[in-house]
Image 1 (cartoon, helix red, strand yellow):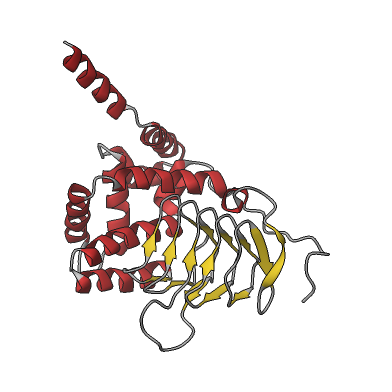
Image 2 (tube, one colour):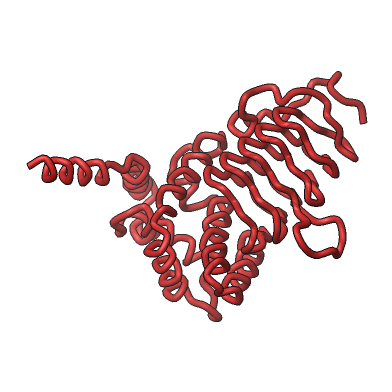
Length: 277
């Protein structure tokens, strides 16, 4: 009896999916408000049985190409989900990150249907899974396709944590040996690159809770400390201490980060006395 009760409790817990429930309700409201999009909303959200199915469908439709059509891409995602079911939890944390940090995201629906930064990071997750399973060519194909569709160039070998917010995403470059921690926010035209043609471990390591402003360039195998803030347009060539703000070309420490987790606060303003370029 105890085992049966525990099983029922687990089933009830599994059935609780507030993001998926909210997404479906948002899609229903949108379909009523904009009948021209009703078929689209049904095909992308309302006809599916889970958040994973809905996101996979949307991303695959965006990546669809005669070389590798959406139905085949869908099979790849399904293989990943079967082998790596933890992706479902990471997916939800990514959606929540967009909703919490982007004032333009008024609904979960916005992120799932329209925001290419969210689509790009999910494409990278499947490409990274392929890469780690020895399917390098297919991983590189998805990197190339993501670059064409979403204007993001993320090497499939790069390691990226959960709760990632790519704001606008256009022009993002992440090199092969780069790593990004959990709960990181990155704006457009950011480069996590090397410093030349040398091989080996040559790209930045971004800690948890970091915010990287638009146009920032972080070059070389350097560590960006947890909960630090990189000002827009900075060129970072040296390690950054935790909980600090850096700015300038080349970047230097200009103060503390200003909060416990800059990636959540998304405060990109620097006091006038903080730095002088």
